[in-house]
Image 1: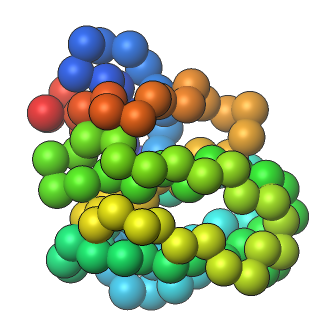
Image 2 (image 1 turned 120 degrees about the vertical axis):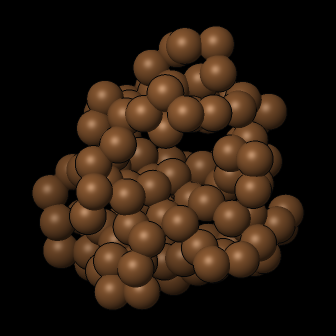
Length: 116
């Protein structure tokens, strides 16, 4: 996975280091069986992107982003949750392990490595 730095369009740092999951295998593995880390999932299309936290041993924030990298929905996810499902279409999902990064707000536009 390729690490990226995530900021808001205003320059507020959200994550210094975040892994980018842009392959099927990386998206399948996610946070399962890992230490605390942060992942940006890149999906091939907009839509409902359900997740679970089976075999994830720590709470994290699931932050759904639209095609313009704007935060559209957020959830706090407990370990071993069977289903977390967004209700608004999303192209990206940022999973932030609790206590490792700043949590953005609904409506924030995010940038990867300075590219907005």
